[in-house]
Amino acid sequence: MDLKRFFIHKRKTDFRHFLTNFRKINENEVVTLLKYETKKTWVDHVLKNIDAFLLDHAAAEKKAAGMAISMISHYPDKPHLVKIMANLAIEEMCHYRSVIAFIYSRQKQLKSDQKDEYIHALHALMRKGTEAYFLDRLLIAAIVEARGAERFSLIANAMEKGKLQKFYHQIAQSEQHHYQLFIELAQFYFNPTDIDKRLNYLLQEEAKICKSLPIHAKLH
Image (cartoon, rainbow, N blue to C red; front, side, top):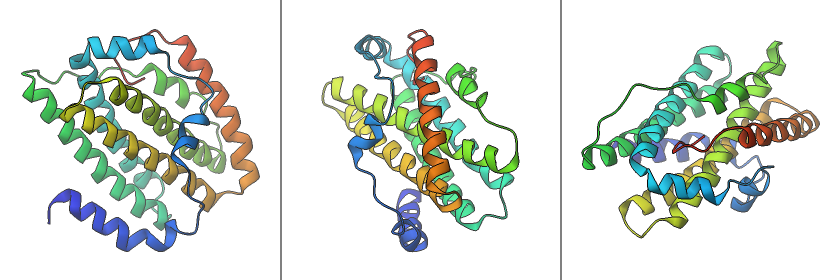
């Protein structure tokens, strides 16, 4: 059984009961909840500099896997989170492997990771205090995944048909699912009122961050 099939099998067997306890989120909800709509100028710039975008995408997938491992390290006493983050880390590394395959097929080389100003600005919003910090980590992760779903979908819809376009359609769907995972985890550990109030605030702040950042051939 290859790694992808192993991941899918484990998720179905380990978490079917856990995931069915929460309402399912419509795909459109992932994008419509965002308070800022990515501009066409960003899409056009990415398509003109797709090699640079692929390099940034690879770095983002690697960091996402690291984030999942970090969550396990910080919360070893939360079995639901540990199991889900372990599977997420595997999935993100599968995505990383796919992205670097595209990079190498285009005769390009990986580069050193660069600071992600978008992620840095979001992390600056995290509150102190064990429970507040935990909730913020989950909700900010959900927002990052929602933004990824929006932008990967925009790219895929603007691309010519081919393997890379198909890949980005698949990645967009994966990001939608990851958004749902983090929202479900928040729902598991916190009450809806606290989630809704904080999520709305963070979404408004995320919109401000997006507006303030220059256009680059980067995911964020």
